[in-house]
Image (cartoon, rainbow, N blue to C red; front, top):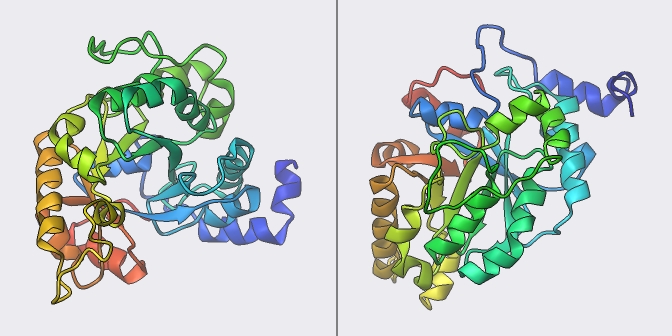
Length: 316
């Protein structure tokens, strides 16, 4: 479908109408989530899946990024590529970015080094669909996380980090994602690197420390170079601790769960890794004060309240 044919469709018109650009704001980056984190702003995400039409519908979302679900959903790279193209064709965003940030979860898990060593190609294939990051679930061992970071770097990337080893992205990988990002292939290769390890990088890599095994290693996992954000995954953490509900008798967070959250959040903060947590309208300002910089589950009212409280300048 050509751009002209696309714009003739009702679906495209609806997407373009919701994505009217605010001319007063000039983007600094490809990845608007990183741009906001650099400004110490809390960012908000929503879930996503599907192909081209879903991408067009998502181009004008009020959230800052889309979590594209492939941990429990289908591992379908063709659909993901189509979704990214739909975002481009339905955009740009009101902030002037070509697309919202897209971060994908994978069925590949950070359970140990051998698992990630055998499956790092899934990280690469996902990134080369044009997405802006990966969220690695069940990040139990630091060596597994290092393989994710290696998979997201070119061999010539700077800075060189001996403990990570040489990057694994190869020449020829830059074509499609460069088109999605709207940059040249050479520029893509310069920007396709994890932030904040590389201050100019546009990949936002994260981990879920979400079970008792990961909890035991959380300080080491959070310290892996190349991570930009992380969460504690209360749903799976509750299952792992044999607390499926996660709450005590008075409906407050179970003490074991609270202790796990506190330890994990402390580990992230010690390594300047942005902490992800659910936020609601009644607690969003408290969460921001606590240090939450990525808000899950936020509706429009919650986001409006949080953005006003944090003095956000970037349009949604």
